[in-house]
Image (cartoon, rainbow, N blue to C red):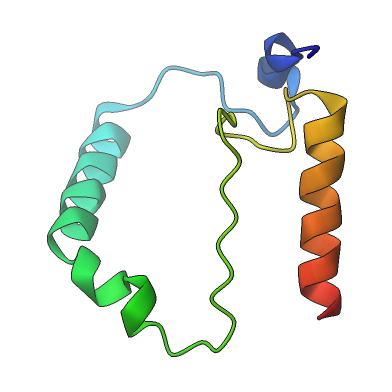
Length: 85
């Protein structure tokens, strides 16, 4: 399987500057908030009738960038199928 993750940092929307301390602090604070309130966001609590969960094993953070072409196509097809339904 051909990996293209080395291309991910070249994505024009990929942030590459150093993180500011306040940004890092806010991300940490938000992460802690989510962890402490995760039960409110769980699958069972969701009011949506569509509770489809797709997990792409060994997927990279940016699932549409830096993955093998076949995985990107699978993800795109899954997104299109979900939107169509």
